[in-house]
Image 1 (cartoon, rainbow, N blue to C red):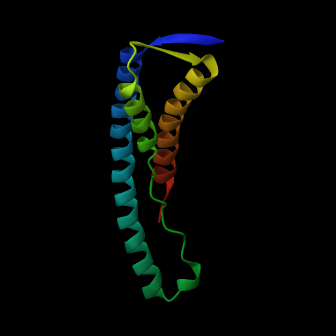
Image 2 (cartoon, one colour):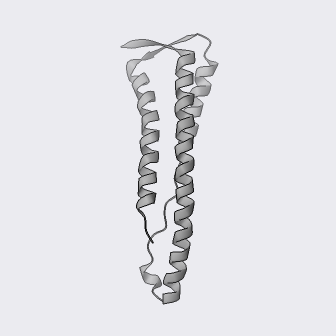
Image 3 (cartoon, rainbow, N blue to C red):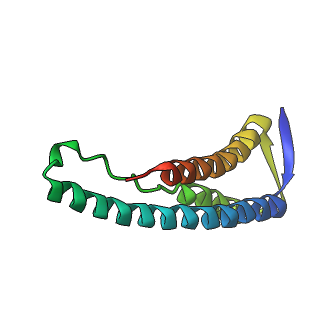
Length: 117
């Protein structure tokens, strides 16, 4: 089914979601840095104790997919009409992609927070 969407409203929604995402992403990066510092102390302690063969894996850095959605915003801004016609599945894909960004951040924050060294 084809739907018509207000272009400016769509841009504003995506930009709002991306700002919220960026705040969450910065939080995950701060937690990552703290866990990396903990890991560094942990590795030093393990090496000093002589049991290097049992070192746990380091924390994995959070990754960002923000650029993908910024590209979508740029494409929407370049569109000349005030409305967009798109397939409802395209609209759902865009919306679910933004939700996935938030879910990914939440998962990363939870995973990093649960690490202990």
